[in-house]
Amino acid sequence: MPDVLSAPLVVEFPFTRSLGPVQSAFLTGLRERTVLGVRTGDGRVLVPPVEYDPVTAEELRELAEVATTGTVTTWAWNPAPRRDQPLATPFAWVLVKLDGADTALLHVLDAPGPEAVNTGMRVRIRWAPRRTGAITDIACFEPYESEATAESTPHSGEFTDPVTGIVTPARLDYTYTPGRAQSAYLNALSEQRTVGERCPSCRKVYVPPRGACPTCGVATAEQVEVGPRGTVTTYCIVNIKAKNLDIEVPYVYAHIALDGADLALHGRIGGIPYDQVRMGLRVEPVWTEGARHPDHYRPTGEPDADYDAYKELL
Image 1 (tube, rainbow, N blue to C red):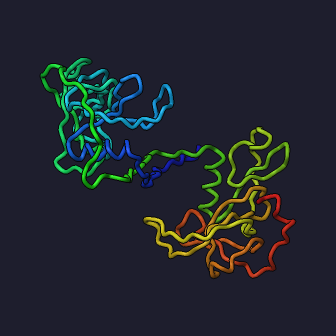
Image 2: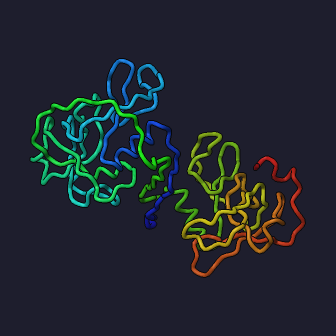
Image 3: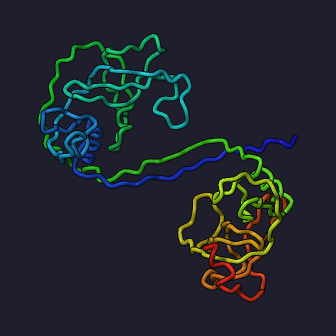
């Protein structure tokens, strides 16, 4: 039995957004150790605030300050914190209804163990020593014995140097395990060959193979070696340098229909100035020693392919 392939993969990017008046006031308030909610038409105070009433869709602008103490409404214990979570030691995820608010805020509770956490317990905010205008300005919640007496009070939402935008890093770590078809494809690439699979119904050859025909919905098993040469069908010019990618910009990334394939795959085009890449350009793979896939594709020197030869693969 062949070895099962697997590889760790990380998808990560910074998500940037601008803030409207409500979210700007909320995050700026956290920087100033002030928690703001927004009041709805029927008098409820929503924390965290939203810009539109979730019931009536009415625009909301009336801000209200609530207390930094509150009550746990529900919780779940996290025994093994992951990368970039608020605390490095085990903690509880909690929904906390702050005094004066009518909705609960999701955050973390610093507690010695799950036996120290219960629904209805009283807590307070522990502020981060350095605050920048983000939800992480609340370092966590901590147990606090007090009575719920505070009421919300009106707030103008005006602060000096308000926060107008935020950058939130998004990251997904996972382990990818290809199935039978893609394992065969990857193993062939390690031998500098490209293998697809033919649909028994429509007879199209798909590269990379998917184990089933996306058109007919039937399983594929017949392996077909394609390429190595192919035709550029479409392309784009990349002008922004990617993090951890040692390629000078600008460069061209293209869809390439390998000879014998009925689905274009993508690859980088090299060996030619970026402004000379064109649809119909004939290319071939360039391999580097020990690589499991082509480093890039370069022109073969052949005449360009006729448009009719690849128009169905655009």
